[in-house]
Amino acid sequence: MDPDYLPFHPNPKKPSYEPPAGAVDAHCHVFGPADRFPYHPKRKYTPCDAPKEKLFELRDYLGFSRNVIVQASCHGSDNAALVDALEASGDLARGVSVLSSDVTDHELSQLNNAGVRGVRFNFVKRLVDSTPRQVFIDLADRVKAFDWHIVVYFESPDLEELRPFIESLAKDQVVVVDHMGRPNVSLGPESAEFGAFMSLLNENTNIWTKVSCPERLTQQPPDYSDVVPFAKALVEAFPNRVLWGTDWPHPNMKSHTPDDGTLVDVIPLIAETEELRKKLLIENPMRLYWTS
Ligand code: 0GY
Image 1: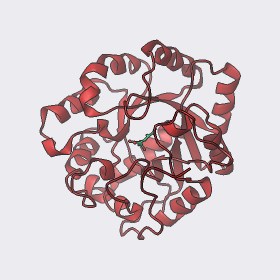
Image 2: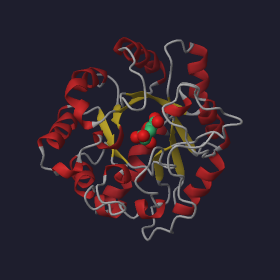
Image 3: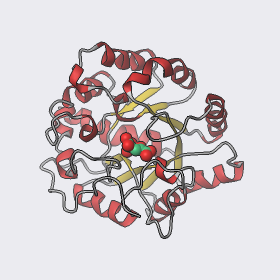
């Protein structure tokens, strides 16, 4: 079973920027290994195995203390690889799950005990088949018992249609938007498109975002300077509602193999003060993932 995108970087550079002690990589994945944790038969891509040992090695090498591991579409709603990684982490990892409508209360409780603190609703059409909104509404309601938040993943052209739905979820739960809502960076940070995303956060104080994924958004790989103004604007406008993550092992990357050390070096460009970096890398993720 060959992966259908580039493998992760085999030996990233040591970043010049040293994250503060206690920093959290709040968006990364574990994949497989497939012989133990098979990929979903209806997945839209086949990943490279990216086992927990490699992730924890990278965490230490880059100077991070903790991980938030996000269940990706290729494992469907079978969270076994995620749970295995959480349990092996010694509480240094927390998770975001993907759930099917028939998940039992007992399973939810087990996921919570393993360290899951969120559920991800994926709206990216190339990654998943569409799920009825009512299924998401019911799941959002059920995870309130555990005080979980919701992570949503969509691409910028879909924001307008999704906005009322996301705002309704955010009425009484935190909603985290992956990768800044995936703006088209060629339009620039002053565009109407990015303005709509900024207004989503401005008008809904329960909506957070991950200022992650320059490697996916850039039009000039591996130079991420075209993405920096977007992330910087969000960090400065919403310092208490932003998270940062490597996105390792970068599933579905076809343009270039991102160097994780280079990605870490983007942090001081988007969060220019130590205070902003402490919020982004420690205070915000700790508040969302490690209060219980
Ligand atoms: C990411 C990116 C992607 C994949 C997934 O669930 C997924 O399969 O999230 C992507 O292809 O954009 O790491 O968020």
